[in-house]
Length: 98
View (cartoon, helix red, strand yellow):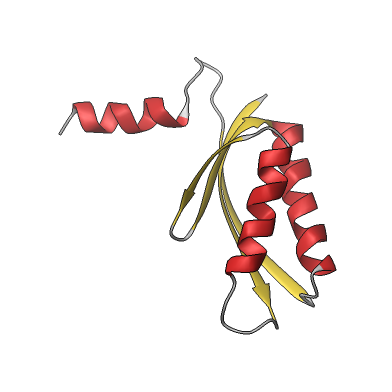
């Protein structure tokens, strides 16, 4: 099943600069071959359900390996069965109505 998620991973107990951890997670997503769109408070991800959630798990593993004692993650998940829709399709639909 195709899925789109909005992922926000927050390492805890590592200080105030989180960008090295986020960069490591972005590398995991890239290595998984997933379509992503980084934004200021997270990453949109598009792909097959099992592949997307395996990559989220791997992000947690990598961030813990980097020394973060805790990781909290917020995920919004969307699926649809009536047709295929990409992240760009959703954005273009809104822009067309503006």
